[in-house]
Length: 228
Image (spheres, rainbow, N blue to C red):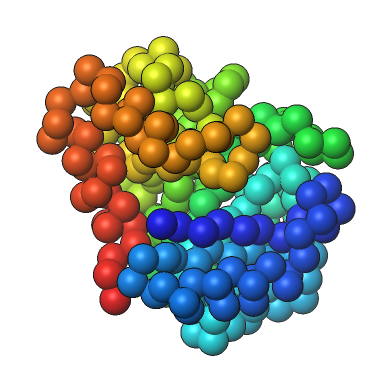
């Protein structure tokens, strides 16, 4: 299981202390759990912080939540946060994935326009060896954009959490065509996610060939997070 946190004190209250918490939690079951951390927007030397997360804490991915961190993923190009480039460069060097929240958010203070997937296009162009995961697949407004990016760029992956599994083919009718670039997620314990096992059973009940389901559930996650 992948345990994800990010740093967004203004909107959600998460500080960089969450990195230490999730890293310590994962140490109890390192064969079963994977830690994903985050970096505060505007902090000095964010590339050095990413290196510390990877080398000292064993973090194996970094989550960026644009609607909660109030920035576009391409902020390094626009001048809003030039040092964001360091984050991507360091992750690319370590071959560690960046996971972007894509889609809307209803939390107070969140700005959903930052979650439009096409803002990630420049990141995929500028950092072609950086594994990029589009969490939630842009739901509920921009699923087509997320699928487009996953099909266009070899380093971009689609992630399915935040959508009721029984309705995945309504949201993503071309899901079988991008199964080789897709991973399953639950978003637990997020709002509306009551039972992980029930979600998994609902996914398995979809009219998707068994081989494609294995890719989404087993093969692809191991490509993103290979066993150490």
